[in-house]
Image (tube, rainbow over all chains, first blue to last red; front, side, top):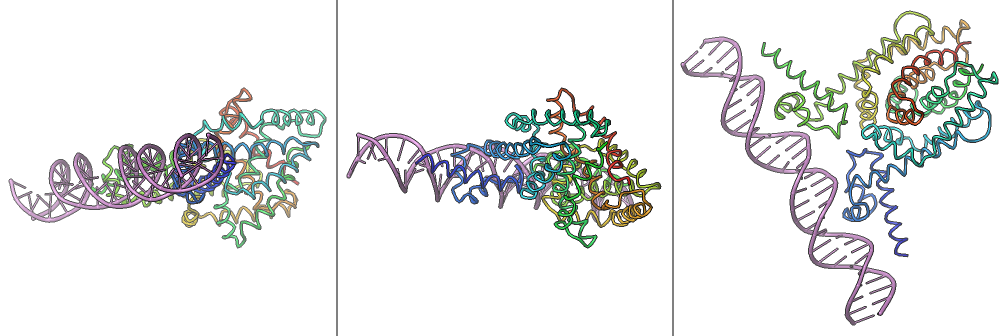
Length: 205
Length: 205
DNA sequence: ATTTGGTTTAACCAATTGGTCAAAAGTAGA
DNA sequence: TCTACTTTTGACCAATTGGTTAAACCAAAT
């Protein structure tokens, strides 16, 4: 019971921390703000998490690992490569739309401290999923379904590039769309519809 | 003469500021560090630029506008759309390789303060270049060279996504490549070679 | 009711940091 | 050389901020 309450407060702090860190980044985030958002005293944040860095790392790893896990599973369902690509974009785009400010936060923090990424990968079971997908691509190349000059890893990177960049570049795209008398939201909704076909056109034999 | 020396010191400060801001971001950057890198007293930085924010904005706009201008011109030389795509990737990839940490810095700061982007666009003459390229795409669609279902702006965003993401995602790709017994540098060198063909395959009628 | 343990808080601290200032140093013209 | 000026610096300041602490609080066991 006491443990549950503690757990509850820990969760409230974590949620507040995710909010603050995602919005301001590690350097811009303030422990006082996290405490305020959690509705508690600042000392209590330190009581539960000792330091800003410890809190950050815990928060970051949880959020990142959750994201990577969802990401990995979208590569790991049944179907042909073409079907998987369609499914991936559908799921990934939905995920990104709901967490629009996560990608830039994640990439910026990982860039600031590349060590973070190792810990994320350790628990994300990414390797087997990636390797499985690569193998499948090679199979379908052999079957004549996919162009033989397609390099699996480059294809994977291309897919991820296409999926994530529109969110990372949001402020720029917002401005561009405004100058073209359109708007970001409607553009994105139309843009995401063509992603899978764009990739499939490119690689089909 | 005095003016020249002043200009010289101003430039030294700016160069140091670019370095510091690109590496640490606005929130992580330190005025003292900028002074040290420029080899001068910290008060002198304030003497020339008044405040951290003013210095940052000046530095940011100059660097960003230079980048966007180069970017725009790569769309604005002669040739068919396919040729332009090839040229763009060549030039853009070279540019990015030389400024590997610029994209994540730029996008992160613009995300932190979306107002910055407006000022960048004002002086980058981007609109006419973009509109020209869009028009050309529509022409070649009419001529039967490009698939009719290609949406010009989406194509443009796709191209930029493919070009920039490998640099933004550097730390992640570095880790992935390591796990696949390869390395980031060699991957990138091979990856960039297939970008243009990937896009052209996708859109050719 | 009292004790015991963990939990929560207000007040506080030390370090960092953007920014200021008055004095010193340098420069050019009279 | 002297004067008027700009540039440069060391010392300093006030605000912010991550982190600590001692006391208050509170629930459960004795």
